[in-house]
Amino acid sequence: MHCMGFLRDMVRTLRVTRKPEAKVYRGTLRIVVLGFLLLGSLGFTFQIVSSSFQMVRVAPVSRDVATIVLAALAAIVLGVVLYLRRRAAF
Image 1 (tube, rainbow, N blue to C red):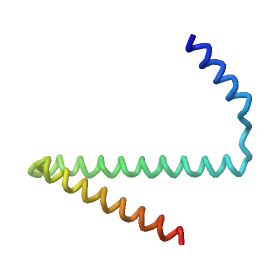
Image 2 (image 1 turned 180 degrees about the vertical axis):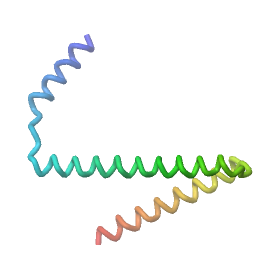
Image 3 (image 1 turned 180 degrees about the horizontal axis):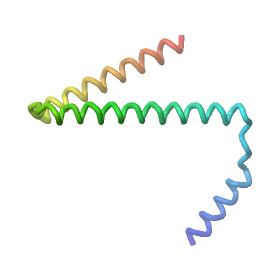
Image 4 (image 1 turned 90 degrees about the vertical axis):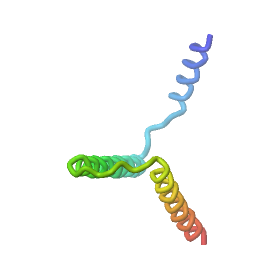
């Protein structure tokens, strides 16, 4: 029963959709490529840092310290995002 309803919804959605204009497609493609590059470079950086820590024996960081550092970083990023959004609103 649920499969037929799902298939009907899919067919209805495909009938309504339109091919995007070239400008919109290029903009979307640009954003996706930038996202891939950002995530790929971030992962590569983490991999390099991780492998350098494996070469040099560093004392393990306690879970409490790691949690505090991550919470502080999250608060800083959130503060910057909110500041930029407020600044853009004016």
